[in-house]
Image (cartoon, rainbow, N blue to C red; front, side, top):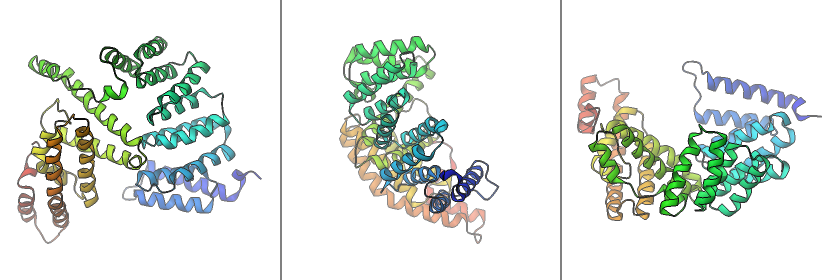
Length: 398
């Protein structure tokens, strides 16, 4: 009997569909917390262990929540269920969704494991060879990645996406001349593709300066160009240039963490925390063209930034403050090892963060208590806010 014809599968499918609908359009006041979603997925899987959509979403949500214990085995179980009992017509779409979710979690190691299963089962699917090439490259084995992405381009020579990725793998290998061949071919096939255009700019830089894609991501800042654009009041290209440096540094950190067995489980959380933190810093700094690697700016204003952060978002908890502090130390520690941040300045920053963290947590806990205290009127609450945040909360900018 087909598992999809069983009562257990049909009940699981109904409950899962209802849960998805509620997540997309929650009733007012009834939005599920991440923990509640995980509990419901666990219930679905208990009732029907073969219902692979819930099996896969459960492990992905657990990973996003920081639980990484048996992720590899659970992902592989879900994938094999998908292949064995899923609808063949939807297999490529579902496999792509799994791949994309794992990439978003920076889990290229699990991407690679899944794709090795997929290319064994479907050796003629160019898309899976392309995905396998990218996952392998992100884990540092560029030679093997080039073999995989070459298979994709051999199977589909007119696919601009595959061509562009194969060119990127040559950039990762430091081969600018081969990269130019494939990136130029990709651009001829898809002249409006911004990713390919961007990678051709990377190719030109590597052709002039040497190195590979990883070196490019941590290239020295062209401060003379930033200063020239500022002097000319050409602010839009200046801000875009600074944003590019910031994004490249973040990508370099992510690639570094994703390639390490001891760090890949924390990578997605660290990157997401840093992106949220620096978005907030950009908003409250009242200045454009901010380079996030300029550690002095965050060092000088750290307490004021955190005061505004606690006040602005409300219900900030200990874990959030710990995450921000630890993520900043990971980021600037990484840049210090590359000497993009002076190591001595990083040590000062590290000591300051560790010294101030406890006090910030105490302020957060006291503020959360008074926010919901019906025994205090607004004037009394404001007096406490002024004491806790040293008037930092009164001003929109630093």
